[in-house]
Image (cartoon, rainbow, N blue to C red; front, side, top):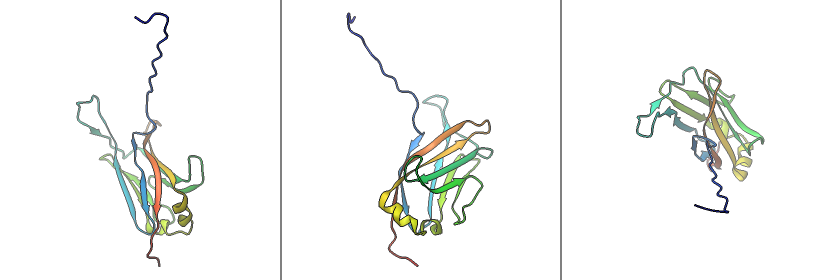
Amino acid sequence: MLRGRRVVVRVELGQAALAVCDLVVSQGADNTYRFRYGTKATDDADTQFVDLTDWGARAQLRYSPGGDVWVSLVKGQTTDHGSYLSADDAGYVTVHLHHTETEQPEWTAYARRGGVWDVELVAPDGEVVRLVMGAVKVSQDVTRD
């Protein structure tokens, strides 16, 4: 027994994202990243992958949280340069950055500074789950058109 002493227990619950993954974007190349969303009832239970057909999904690459947006992706939409975000019935989320997206002149500046990114899933009931987040590094290409 601790008499006269105060014991402080700090418990941190939750997490910023289900996974942290830093991206290396190869400038001028097609870049595809794939993640899978599943749930488990207990530690020893099998993972049940979630059918994401009716879910929304969104992703952004930026200089910093709240900073200038490099690319904004929404499930079911394709950017003017051909980049997209998809989510399927087997729980897979695919982020595709098309080579014409990363060949844009501003990507040279992104390569100098680096940035951050994340992917959020939106359940049919509106609940938002941050699936993955991390830093972004752009690897400049040497061969150019």
